[in-house]
Length: 188
Image 1 (cartoon, rainbow, N blue to C red):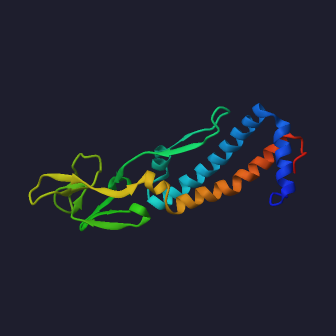
Image 2: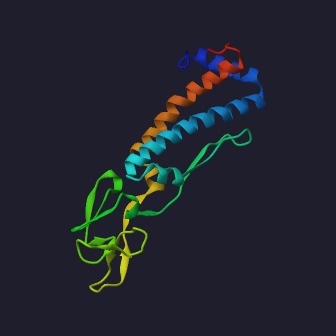
Image 3: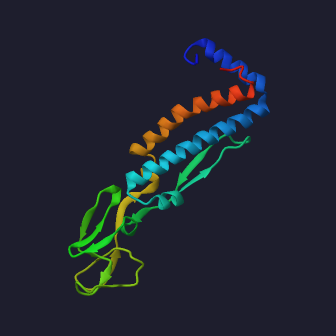
């Protein structure tokens, strides 16, 4: 394709000049949005594996602001604090609650979801959250967290690598595709 040598860069610059500013901004926004959407898909998929959360929860937490001709910026934001153990397929066992934060199942000793004696435990009406006793008595009880922060996980590890790889490979391909389309195949 000639991207590595000076000839490819000169042809790219000529193709951009032939489009004009308004058309180029529209093409640029389309390229950025397509690349961003493809990266978002990879981020969601990888973040689901990395955190151990369900895809539905990740989709709800990760929001996007798309590029337009005025602002050619695609922004991906995540919200959320320390996620409760409830969202990691928590289930009660005799030794404590079993949950899978970071995709690895483990037992959280001395925690509970239900009340009563085994084997006839009943829901305590707290929405399935996981609790532990804060003292030696029956109360107070404290809701248990997982240590998973979606915004932090989004910019670290495999999720970050997938995002960067996606942008690095897809953006030049999409730009070349759109330029070929807009110049009637003159740019190849």
